[in-house]
Length: 236
Image (cartoon, rainbow, N blue to C red; front, side, top):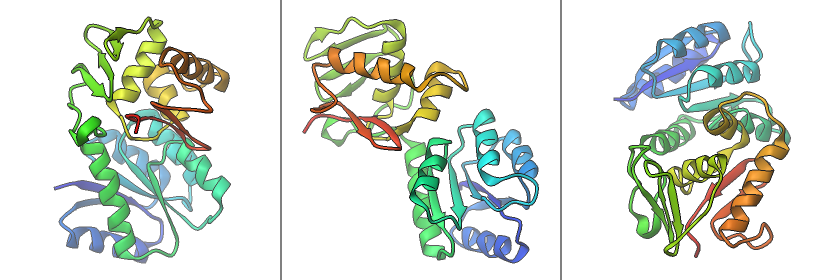
């Protein structure tokens, strides 16, 4: 059964969330502050985190960034800040989903179930078949075939000539086909750097578009979700 960490400083709310999760068959761990959350995440064995942003010792957004520095565990943030720009910032900082307070137990379970499903299996390929979990297994999305082990990529049978970083970016997006990947995640999992200029990602995405025979104004495989990130999909 999934193990979920609840990070909430209000004891009554924390107890209520733990009860809801337990009733739905989850193993639950909890803490009331940001540093406690970091300790729990560092210990591992977590399938998801429900993170309140109003913590007594750390701003929740800072706690989120620190969690992302040590783990890729799915994080659902709970916030009273019903502001689109703020929510976009949280998603770019590494949140997988969000809940705006007050929320119901049904909303919590729906959001949590969704992020658990996404983390359990990569996005679908053409025809709805699930992609292999092994990051070195070949991936096919539409007419695009990527083989991470051979470091080769083919589009409709034609081999693509890619730089090392272009291939890394394409392989990562293909392995998570159908999922919107934030810039923050690309930085940590493809570039493996905390900070680089945004233009660097844009340049590589633009280069990939050209080699895939598409333009930003007429995308086929690479779809930008404004303010959130980019995803690779099979053309319709």
